[in-house]
Length: 162
Image 1 (tube, rainbow, N blue to C red):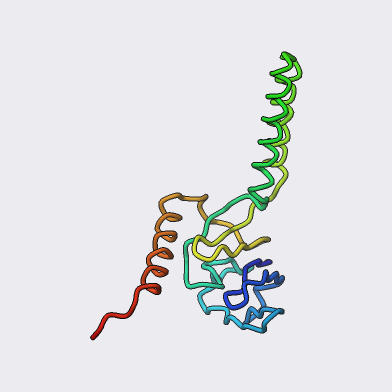
Image 2: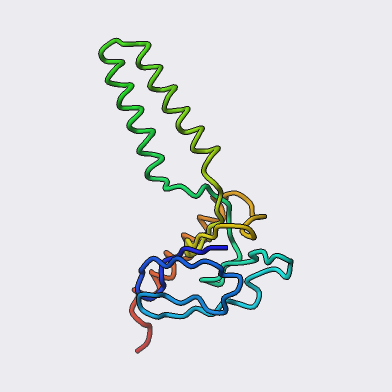
């Protein structure tokens, strides 16, 4: 199984493979070592991911292992190209572009593999053993987003006292 995450100390991207056998996740940039929690993997054979190894969260979800911005970019380019042909009154070309864009989107959906991501820290897990989790849930995402916002607000508040 592979993991990809941003180091909590230096924010550099970290990519590691074979994490089932590691006891420590080490950042190659700053040397920060994160101990792999004892309950990080279920005691199955082969090992299956049970919780996030980077943060203390057990809230993980399945998503496509594809950059969302690139996917949105493909759709926007298709939309803009179809608007141009629509303005030129080329009805057949307009619908051909829209159909081709939808076909590209469908092919990417079918061909791109899934990965598991953490709601809290964004770590991504790929490979065998990183499955069995539910798809994205907006309520869980919002709970984690609001928790981070409250922690930042508390950190920015001056200490109470006299």
